[in-house]
Amino acid sequence: IAGITQAPTSQILAAGRRMTLRCTQDMRHNAMYWYRQDLGLGLRLIHYSNTAGTTGKGEVPDGYSVSRANTDDFPLTLASAVPSQTSVYFCASSDSSGVYNEQFFGPGTRLTVL
Amino acid sequence: GQNIDQPTEMTATEGAIVQINCTYQTSGFNGLFWYQQHAGEAPTFLSYNVLDGLEEKGRFSSFLSRSKGYSYLLLKELQMKDSASYLCAVLDSNYQLIWGAGTKLIIKP
Image (cartoon, rainbow over all chains, first blue to last red; front, side):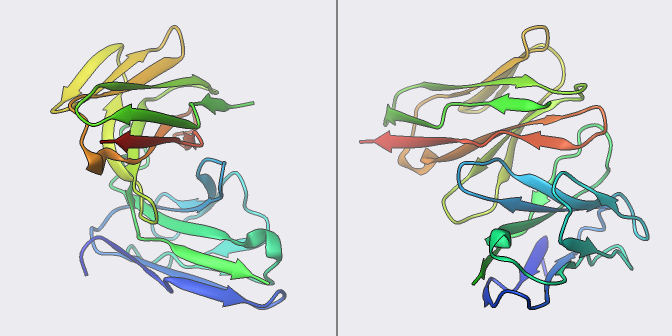
């Protein structure tokens, strides 16, 4: 593994189903983030984690949950998917959560909820 | 509220120079980032400004004026591979990145 990986690459999901998007980084970065990207809108932060064992809510957290059991993994769970959660989801990480936190992005997961 | 504005789309000619502007209104300021995003790919880091002035990195330069809430990304000697979206993002007082919607740059031969 080099950098950040996400799985799956894409997924079509029925509304009401539970889904976990996986994210793993091998850079030993402390901070990790989940964003969604929708056409015409900027990246919007869903949840973040400044260090293993801690998480925080971003701009659009409703309907999503995260956990950070270790440094490398930061899964995002949709408990009961709805069509408005159709989006491209990016996981990112940075060495720190303070100033100059250049973020490195995974390749993204394209999720369609029908 | 927090707001970052960039033009939706710009067109330029191969070999030319283009300037992409970004204006922002955020709760606090801890730096401004520019990222490049090719269609269907992840954003990648281009530049970071925290002090006023121009930062030059090869064909790309980024300028910041904190008093005006303004930045621009300058791309010189445009190449076809520069066709991409360019995202402006500000690190706010909570050290969260606030993102603009991005500027889609189309390069014509």
